[in-house]
Image (tube, rainbow, N blue to C red; front, side, top):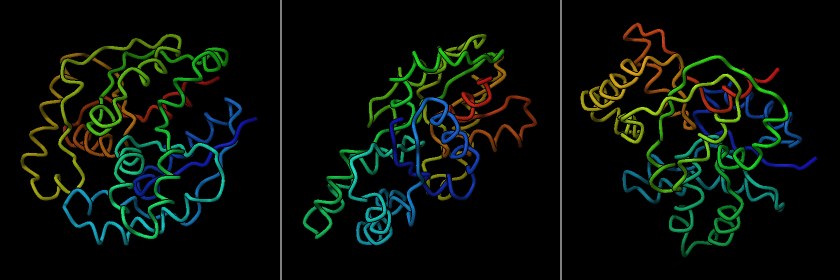
Length: 244
């Protein structure tokens, strides 16, 4: 059995605990023993994106020290945006500080969860997952444009028998969440979400899936407000639901 460190992220701690639990369950079924990183807080992305590097370092330092545990196991992150921050931007954020070497070590170990799962598709198929549903996939901005991960989550969904993957015309458009953006510009944020959800309605899907809890928080909340029957699920939760 292989081992991995799981970084649940802030949203995973506060609003998406089930996503973290489902990721642990799926990984265990695939023979990956996980342990949750202890003592993590935020990766610092909201402050960093707003140009406040000092506060971002202050917030992220506790997480850095928790993830830099002296091991070499992969650090799995069930969030494209947080994985992008740690893997790509921590080196810049901590450059010239006493934590620069630790940030580099952690960045090298970080894997976005769906990319890791896509390497296990044969093992996933062997577990005979099945889910009868028409599914649309939403590409999160950070995952698509910074980590360059597009096909991996679709490969994972393709390993589930009975699942029909419907390509949404606006799959690559931003959902309008953007962390603090949705709080600073709520009218624009809602308009962006509704434009995406129009595509969802026209596609006639049962389930909207993403690999980023922030996007799911935005789109799921809006679907609920609109009274839509379409469910939203993280990729890890889809897999858990499909496993016998």
